[in-house]
Length: 239
Image (tube, rainbow, N blue to C red):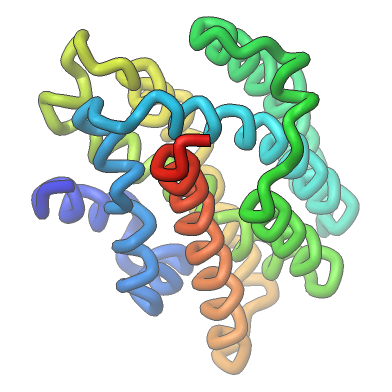
């Protein structure tokens, strides 16, 4: 990912937002996540198809666990507006995004039955288990600190890749994926997550709590790196 793309991600969230502060506290982890070779391969179209197909099957499982995480957010919500927001996200994940994912995979020749029968990779289990554990052991702020690297990170990646000509060229097999995460609908989801993090920090945050939130955020970011690694490992192993 060219330096100009990395710089564009820096302007995504207000500098004084909790999200920006958390990201700034683990810059190397964040860079390795948003500039990963898997991401670069999506951007220029060079990612082996085998790696992307494996990623798609695991992402199907991941989305189901993500819906469970937002169900936990609904349970832990501190008022009706937060409950409704979590309920809308659950509905969007199960009723909309899962359907879009299944349709997208079908275009790659991957049937839903195949995805459902594919064992979860250790990297998927590790990531989703961590998010749910943090949410169960902590409060809503802890849970959103674990969710944010995925929700907002994909939006940053989509925006950055869409700014580079190879990503949007019609010959790029991953152009549709990029357009989803660069699109207005997903960008709005990411911005809502940034706002929610800030609201929760205003209600629950203290200076002494910040280091623990950094650790949650950084750990989730490293688990995102592991998810990308998983796809490349599959391609390199040829299995």
